[in-house]
Length: 118
Image (cartoon, rainbow, N blue to C red; front, side, top):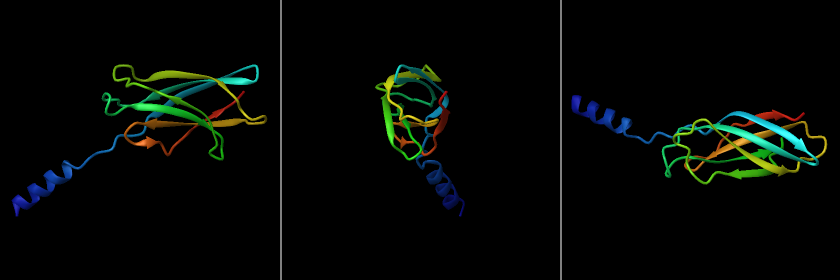
């Protein structure tokens, strides 16, 4: 019986563990003329080219994507890190946008970061 228990323990400990989605730890928006610039800070346990935070996007409440910032390389030794996107058009009257992060392994996160526009 101890062998069965040992085997079960080994098999369950060897099961794949999925990393958490990249966390948006901060986001700022600034308006310039009729477009906006977004500075988004992400935290993710990047391990290298096989697993890293590979983007973020700005969405409206209904899920409409306003812009996507693609991240083309891992940030293993730079955590958290901030990347920007300029020239984003926001519909008139929008008071809040939502930032959603993405990981190359796990895809788009379920959670979003709400950002009030001033």
